[in-house]
Length: 462
Image (cartoon, rainbow, N blue to C red; front, side):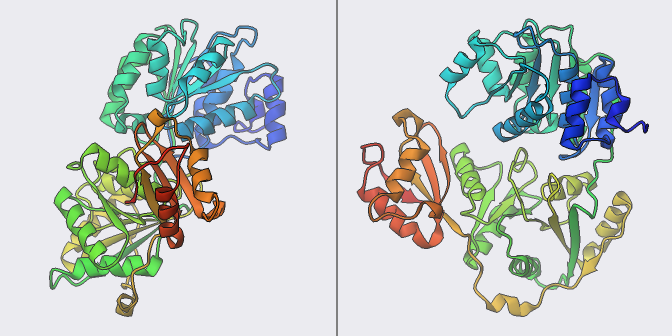
C-alpha cells in the first residue's frame, strides 16, 4: 500500500469506504503532507493554491474526531466569502454522507439572520461561515462555541485582504484556547505569519508548490516599440481585440494610470471600469457589481484595490506594466486559471524594459515566451461590448425587496424573457439586476412604468 493512499491513514472505516465510493484513493500533495499531522491532533499551516484538495484534508480531520452524539458546535470553519463557505459545507456533507447524523450548518451574511438562529437552536456539529456573520452570532449569544475543539481558517490570506482581521480577533477571543487550529492559505505573507504565531501552538508546515503551472495558466509576453506615448495603449487594445475576453482585469502600477487607461478604453468604445483606492465605497461597490455580473468586461485596477476580488471564471489578466515586485506578478496572474480552469495572462513591455523580463525569468525559473502583437488591422473593427447591462433600483432589503420580486416585475406582461435576466444583487437600499444588453431599454421601461412589490421605484441604467 502506498503512503499516499487514504487507506494508509488511521481513519474510521466508514470514512475510508465513503472515500472509495467517491473515487478518492490517492491523496493530493497537500493532503499527504497535512493529514498525518491533522489526525495526530497537531496545529497545521497548509499552503497550496485553490483546487489543491485542502477541504478534504481538514474535513477528514474534523470528521475523524467528531462526537456525533454531542450536538454542540465542535468545529468552526471560517471562509472569506459566502460562495466559498457554501462550497466547503457541500464538500464536508459529501465526505460525511456515510457517517450518521452529522449536521453541518452555514452562517454567512447576505441572508436572513432569523432562520440561522432557528437552525442553531437545533444544534450543529460543524459550523462553516464568514467572519462577519459568525462574530455577529457570537455577539448576540445565538452561537455558543464553548465546546469547540477545532478552528479552521480557510484561505486566510484572502480573509485578511478583505479586512476581516478584527472579526477574526473577536472570534478567537470567544473560543477555547485549548483547541486544534488549522490554517490554510495560498500565500504566506508576514501578516499570516504574525497571526499564526499569535493563535497557533507549534504548528506543522504542510507546504506544496503554489506556483501556477503552464497547465493552468498560459502566459504570453508582448513587446512593443517604445517610440511614442500611445504605443502601450495600442498594444493593450490589440490584445483585448484579439482575445475578446468576457471578463478581464488590466493591472496598472499607479492609481492615476488606472483612471487614464480606463478613460482611454472607454473612448475607444470598450466597456471598461476603474477600481482604485481613491474611489468612494459606493462607487467601488457599483464597479464590482457591474464587473461581476458581466455588464462591464474590463476592470482596470491597482494591486491594492484588487485585493479580495472574488471573480469566477476570469478569462484574462493583463499586466499593463511589468510589476515592480516579481511576487506581485505571481499574485496577478493567479487570479485567472483558478480551481482547475484554464487561464490566460498577458504582459506588455517595451524594448527598454527587457531587463525586467530577464529578472522575471530568473524569479520564475522559466523562459518568458515573447510573441508578436496581434495585427494592427484589428483596430479597424469596433470594440467588442459586454453582453449584459446593469439596472439600479432605488430600493433594497429595507423595502423587503427580494430577487423574485424583481424577476417577476421584469418578466410580466410585455416584459422580457427570464433567460434574458442575469445576476440580481440586493443591498440595504439598492438593488441591481443584469439584463442582456439588447433588451436593456425594454427592461428599463418595464421597471420604470411598472411596480416592484406593489411600489414604484426610481430605476436607471448604470
